[in-house]
Image 1 (cartoon, rainbow, N blue to C red):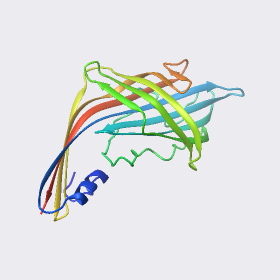
Image 2: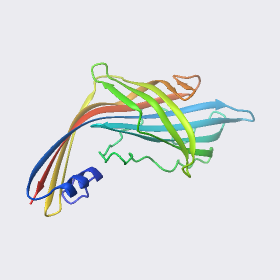
Image 3: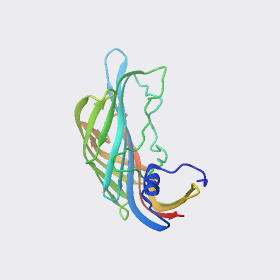
Length: 234
């Protein structure tokens, strides 16, 4: 990232905590996973009930966060909304380490689709979803209960998640770097890790099982990484 770019919330927190001149180092291990799923229920009158879901989970140090959404549609029979990943390639998700109380960002609006009508939207959140990654077996396991809320924040109960993501081949290695300097404090961050960007998911979300019948499907990605931060104060 360019030297003048704004830092992430975690980096700003570290910078604010710095006192006096000197150098501080911090190393944070993290694991993350994302899942997209679709549940199709054939209906009467030439239409289908379609639910599209997304969940992003991260563990960084001792902090665990999970956030996502579910959008319900009524679609013409045989048609899916525009935002459904019909092939197992949801694309990479960029994570930013944040303080414990913050949640990863998710898309707040479903894509408009002239053929499908949006019926309801619900937020998913939890600090108790367990994410385990086995790099030797190239799998990630998500277990826990998600709190479901409507767009006004009303509590709608819980949604159990029991999913296993399996990579199709060797995990890919990746690296990234970031710098920031405001004239009195500078930050350098470097990240290295391994991950699978295309996975299939088996298990269940609520009462929906994957692989399911017909067009029910779930896909995702996962990674493990370590970020080293160097903070210098002048």
